[in-house]
Length: 243
Image 1 (cartoon, rainbow, N blue to C red):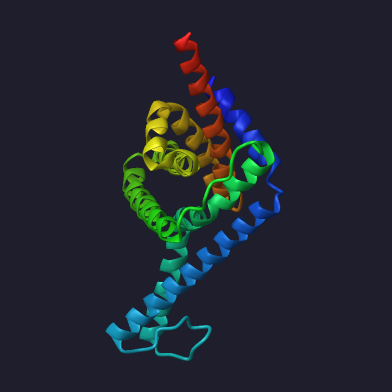
Image 2 (cartoon, rainbow, N blue to C red; image 1 turned 90 degrees about the vertical axis):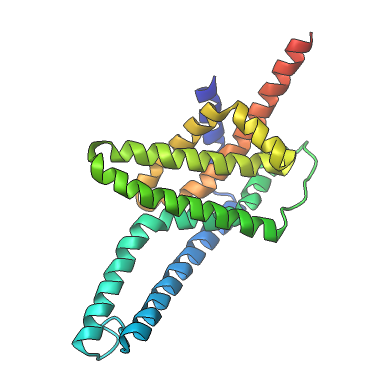
């Protein structure tokens, strides 16, 4: 039953991928992520300049000494490598600030009978986003060490780890809009296995370049459907027990 609910939720989300509000969130997330990475690189160059006393810009742009040349090239390579590991976690976290728009678009189309809910305050959204970003980055950097010891299982570890984190975050986001933080947590605990499996299926495309940038959008939409189906299933079970 759990897998059937997950697949039906995913297919519904996939069918709405062309929604204007979905595209807006996608481009916002990608744009802000690149802006953050560029700002991080500029900050790294500024730190190098402070400590080494030379303007260590990338050699294409400045006629600089060999020390600055080496530092600039090294810092550029470092940021490229780092962005490979952090692009998706950062994009996921930043996009999570706007995923309420995705959830609202799903409910407008598939659950029009539901009453509207207020938006999550910006301060709460930023707080949750920073918390999610910190956990994602820390967990994935720690996983890099594990990959070195278990290279044959690295892909499965990546899927399981990010599946757990994505499932937890996106389900909490979808359920919190209707049930509040504590109600969402209680529902999530009752269905932790289904949510982890759904998150793992969302994490698998993270290994595919470009496709992985769609994961936050598809994840938010899929988990909005999943929340409503699990809540309905819980309601049916409660009514059956009451008879």
